[in-house]
Amino acid sequence: MPTQIVTPENNTVFSGNIFIFYAFDVGDDINFKTLEHSQALTKVPYHAPKYFRNYHIPMAIELPHPHETSGCISAKLHHFGVISLIYKIPFNSTLEELRADINEIDYKYQERSVSDANSIFKKIAPFVTKPAFFHLRNCYPVIQVDHDKSQAGHKLIETHGTTIASLLRFETQNLSANQMKSILSSAQEYYRGDLIIIDIEAAFLYDPDYEELLEIFEFANIQQLELQYFDRLLNQQLSAVYDSTLINLPWTKYLPFSNIATHTMLELGRLKIDISVITERLANSIKLTGEAYYSDIYELLVAKLDVNNWKASVAHKLEIIQDVRAIYQHQIDNIRDSLMNVLIAVLILIEVFLGVLHLIK
Image (cartoon, rainbow, N blue to C red; front, side, top):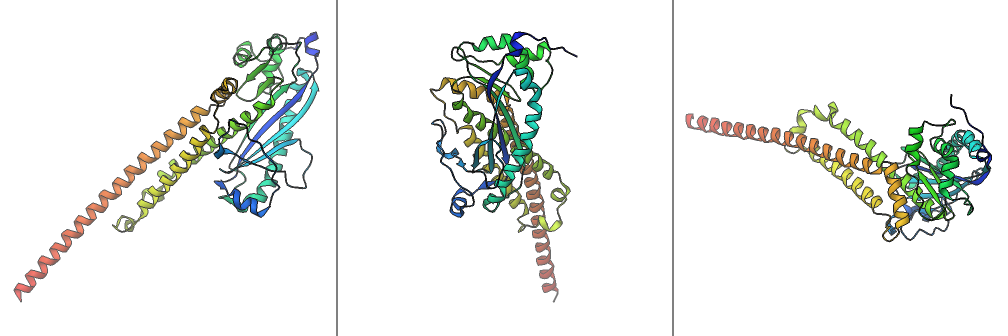
């Protein structure tokens, strides 16, 4: 087992906060207009960052009462069926002590977030299309350390890099040199003295202006959640394509006036439009032109959260489903054409037979 070498740097006490971003997918759509009119929840003022486009402005709300003082500093509803929560947990300890406590903190707020999100869901369920608590949940923690002008960011890596790397992976022991190198390779020092490390499970912020970055972390977490949800939904559609109830249709469904195939294709078309609109709007909701710092952080987040691969997976599965169902529709059309030809032939034979009977008489 690796041993922790105690040095004066290990005993350095840091202050800061752990921000935990949660996102819950609870339905297809939230009707903001009727929800506001109902006054089921208390709406609070929300000033969206200048880089958010209008079609992604969420509704900021208060947690329904009664609720415990949970450290929830933000609760928002997103029109595409998502509840997002942000928790702020202050700390004043060494990074080694924080590393020892991080899993307990994570578990505690996982439970609390479910309870808080459920209290919101109960209020909004009547205004949600296809409500369910919950389809999918995402979480992304950010460890923010208060900035000290006397200590540059790169020095933190030199003195505490080992602890920071394991902290970002929720490990209580030091990681291997290769793992540590992989995690710390994403470290960014945009301005003199700051430090940002973004990893697949968490991020580390050492920046006096960190508040302006919180919305980007929240948005990226939501973006990943929705892509994962659509990917799972499309997996279900792929399974349905091969389901016996779709393949072994009763013979009546092949009759010319049966609309089962048309309905199936329309259903796929609606699904494709819904997914395409939401994914495109999410992809284009942030306009970071001229904001090099925010743009770099967002791109790094997208890479670490594998957003582009999730997006590619969704697009690929949409193509597969469309191709398979198009073949399925083509087969039904061929069978219908054959049935029509048989019916025409039968009608001609009946007409000939009746003509022969008329001549015999």
